[in-house]
Image (cartoon, one colour):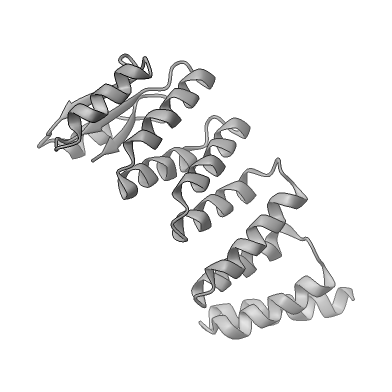
Length: 193
């Protein structure tokens, strides 16, 4: 089986480099039969399933990876990305919160959480996640740039959650690029509305 596994791996990689996602996917499926539960194979299968338009199948691979190793940050990142693609933003945010629980320095999780908040403009989810994250990491800060009809409702949610010093509404900013460049993973998290 070692030689056969190597054969399918090389076949899959060759097909990937040639841009043939279907052939690569089929070769990785054969490889997965020989080496079930290998994280790198599950990752490749999920990626190729998305390229082939089968997000549901990709989710199955990611969920399997998480089942095999719930402490694997990369597995949770992949699952969170795929849940976001499938528009299950609430569950995706939960996966990225798991990533941050496993690795508080994971910038990718912060960025995906930010992206989810912007994509949905679900400020209730933002406030709840900020509350949870602040409970785990008291130094965590959020800034929300922009204005709009939901601004007062958002301010009310922030006040009700007791996050006045954690979540800052910075209003409309013409210099948003400069504001965002000023952040690091240990500073306030930029959230653009």
